[in-house]
Image (cartoon, rainbow, N blue to C red; front, side):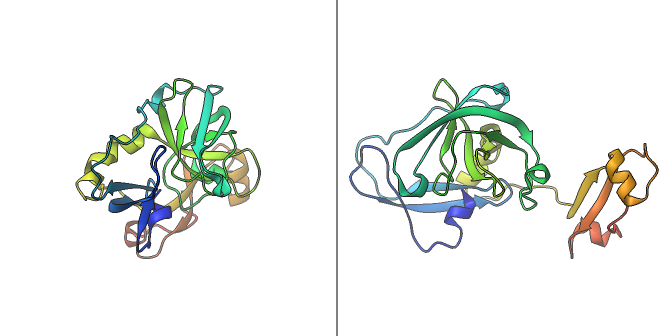
Amino acid sequence: NAHVVRGADRVTVTFAGTQSPMQVEVLEEDEVLDVAALKVKSYSGKPLPCLRLGSSQTLKTGDWAIVLGNPLGLNNTCTLGIVSSLDRSAGEAGLDWIRHPMVQTDAAVNQGNSGGPLLNENGEVVGIISMRAMFGEGIGFAIPVDSVSVCLPALLQRRKMPRAYLGLKMATLTPDVCEASGLSIGTEGALVERVLAQSPAEAAGVVAGDH
């Protein structure tokens, strides 16, 4: 994950079957997806272990989900659960700083799982663990692997992935939101809840309360 390596002076990784940590170079980060591309430095040994990439588009709610990682310093930990939800929005999860949909799982996710793979029952990578919910247990989130595959070629070439950016937070105009905002019940669209300073939305004159 980008949040794991950001600001680090030196990054090392350890692979299964290797005896000592290896130093890696951070090629590029994508803060929107929370992923980073790493390159192992000066390695001439046997091929390093790898996992086959699957497709997150094939996932269905209720599918088996396997999480690998080093939670709380417990190396090579495997936990099992299911895919709890697809396309979970950051707003629903209370993670306002995340700007992409995530896969939700009830497989145990703890500190130290970040950057580990979310696997399907065939052992294919279908997501990258990003974080767990701060407000409960049994709620973890993964970045869909298809989203990672789109930006990976640019990151490997040390280039940022270009993205559109408005700089505002919106909420769907449900009956409850309409009532709380003083709008007529049945009004359709979205309500602007917040506009970031010095953003394109602010420059265009959009303000909180617009709909």
